[in-house]
Length: 499
Image (cartoon, rainbow, N blue to C red):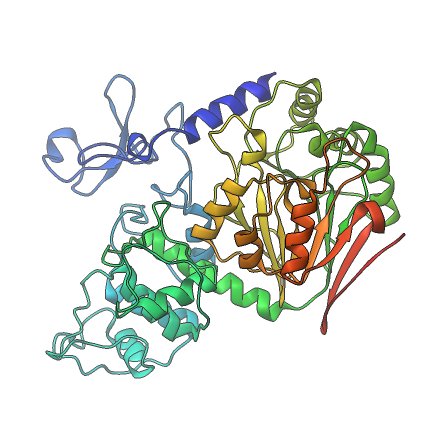
């Protein structure tokens, strides 16, 4: 019950409008503190000193204990921030650092000099003397500015200046990232504020194609907006991780387990790590457990409960009882069934860490995989609309696992992300509530998986099957093919059923 209440509280927090958690001028940031810039001596503070206030208005300096403690993080303003993992990732690569007040400056616009320095560090570009009239040899980024200029990544202006301290717009960032990392491709997302005649249109489409950004929920890109340091960290992290996946190698095996009328997918990496996505209904727990053991699985590194419907989480109860589980991703959608409450009780009693992913988030799991969340908690009362949708990339093979996501979810995902994939686990067991023709055309899967058993729901819908055939996708189903196993290797992938 404690975990159920906790999930209710988390869900309520996530539903708050953005303005309610951001600091207004003079207010506090997402960590609950702020920096003093005026009349600081009056309060015993240094100018620029970061601090908190307790409930009585007393000043709590960063190096003093406080209870309850503000969210902790690598920097004073990153604890709990949406870009925290990306910032820490770049910090651990020695690519970024913070300010003297202990903050990272998540809301500050990144300058051209800062971007030049970070890019130079990551690409290990040779330092070079720039020829810009406004960059003296004493400038801290002198050689980095010369390096990106010499590599034709960042240029100057017609008046011969570089304007090192100017912020970078989102359009400018798109262009320099495409040049720096030699990205290519063209996305299928169109933005209402980026016409085909826009000078950065092509670069923006390349970012979309490479899953670096999908724009904003209102279908805008806002090319003229300044890029914050948090946004820059997120974009660069995605690029680096995508490149690492392409270079890492190693094989993975994806098993679409035959659990009858339900869903259960097992991912195994060459490093021995495991992801279990759903577990069928309560009667499927033994079958899933047997399948896991027969494939050498004794620990679940990451369990994903796409949504709380019993034909997805029922079998997870047995798995939680019989296998060590290191971490759980949960959609955050609260349910009232006995199965769901049993599931929550087990998570609580075993003290298993639970996270509710945000849309667009990359899951840090294995160096060989890029795992991005394309859908998660939804305000709708329909739990299917809150299905966690995962886009899993391994070398040249993409898997799109859609849970029971609806046609409405599909439309939103197409607006925000490049959904093209080689393998599609079709939504909602082939129901007519999922798999719209426009979505299937955007995904363009070579292989489509339908997970279902004997049922009275009419799954799979005949029109959905026809749509899949119309786009040339080869169809596998757990009903006819049993356990379906996908294996990747140097020459792509192979797939087969065991019936």
